[in-house]
Length: 316
Image 1 (cartoon, rainbow, N blue to C red):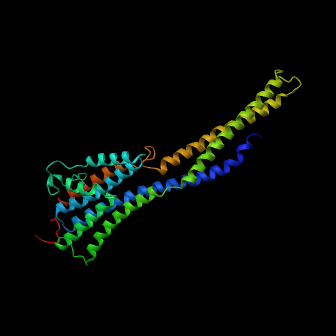
Image 2 (cartoon, one colour):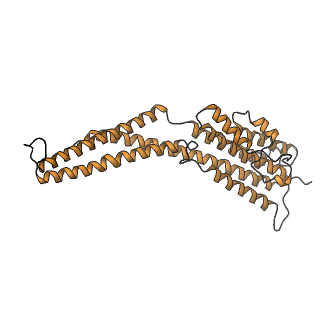
Image 3 (tube, rainbow, N blue to C red):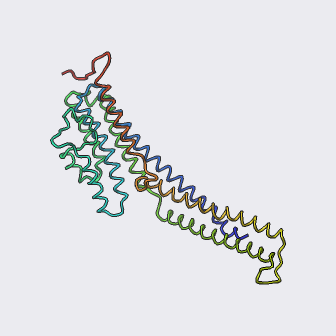
């Protein structure tokens, strides 16, 4: 009977936890999907430029800006999970310095064409004070595409091909906005606070109910063995059997139930903040390495056509 004390909370806690966990998982997938959209836009942009025979230095510049936008986005979101503004600023600038290009190098050096995670001092000086450096990188991409169109390296601005290339740049920018939206828009604090409070109250009530059940079972056992402080209390053997069964059932309801609810609550918290928890973090580093490998393979394939010459929209 004592287990009925916490029964009325189980329905509400389970329902609210289910909604919160579902929302957290959807947000996690939306964030991961945003990165995938961004990476696919970079891959497609490289293929489009090489198909038009764009100069290799410009292809490298565009793909490097795309990879840097993904790196900057991951760095910014990781730093944003830190508690204080000073820690966030220091963490971001520390990681930004790790992207520094070799001293004396330029983006037009052939040996650096596949060094996609390098940022030159002139670029860093402009980006370090930007509020959204990852998104602003795609403005450079769009500007470079427009310049190549003016110089005749790609079809003119009025052509469908130019619109397709700009559409790829917009898709990359949309991927960044999708990631930001999934991270920035969180569940209201009052909802999460109420949910955590209900889970802990449910745990306390289950502990009290199990303690009372154990106490009643112990009292019946003492009465059966003539050890009860009140001598006129009588208990039969089947009463002990019944109380032991109730205690075992109460054990599973009062121990495993709260444990499951607490575990689901912690998992939801980790998934809801994928850049603040190692347990629920999106594997962006592994995805970036796969992207870099694909881009390097793309460069190799474009420069080694087996039976034909490399295409070129504008002949030199």
